[in-house]
Amino acid sequence: MRILLTGRNGQVGWELARLLPALGEVRATDRTELDLASADSIRRAVRDTKPDVIVNAAAYTAVDKAESEPELAMRINGEAPGVLAEEAKRLGALLVHYSTDYVFDGEKAGAYVETDSTNPLSAYGRSKLAGEQAIAASGCRHLIFRTCWVYGPRGKNFLLTILKAARERSELKVVDDQFGAPTSSAAIAAATTQALEKGGGEGIYHLSAAGRTSWHGFAEAIVRAAGLATPVKAIPTSEYPTPARRPRNSVLDNSKLKKEFGISVPSWQELLKECVGASQARRDI
Image: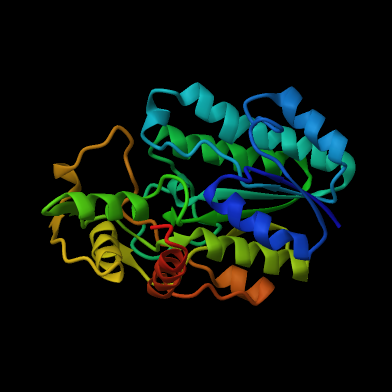
């Protein structure tokens, strides 16, 4: 199996670059080799590689900045997946792509299933939904994994932001009225690899940690897991306005993933413990 991986230096891409070689020959690219903002760059990389599987782990992920750069976000998150899908269709390759809980508006009381209506609240969410739609419209073989509150020991994410702030400030203030399931980049990469090993089951799947918490609950758990004592105060979203609106409920139902692939993602608490433990052992965080 020949695999083309985009975004090798990103949170999920870095983890995938470690796991995917067990499945076959991997060409792991960064922005200098495959730039999602350039259709020509995408086509050139795919045609040079001639992969059996394309794993698109690159994306525009600056949620708030996307409000002032909607065209760039749409080009990378909405249009580029369509180009990848066209190339995958031409080759008969499988396209693996990552989407987000932000395609939903968060108004549902329970966990979202794959068939629930989408209604993104932000430019970022709209761009990610456009990517899903472009892939589906292409008719290529595909796996789209919607995930939630992604973090890891690399890049820019909530975990690293909270750890830095907890070491520098006397108190943290974090919103407690938005809910989701923090999901580590390592868990996403592991589940992706398992799904590729098993094969089949094309379509959209929710892939997130088990359980549910608020950003405040996650922040408290991060601080404690790192052995810090910084107080974390709960505040409402109204006290922490951001350019992009976030869904109040980002919890995803993973039943379809388990039924099709036999994959059960551990609880968010377990994933956090594993991430912090492994990172401290490597002195990453």
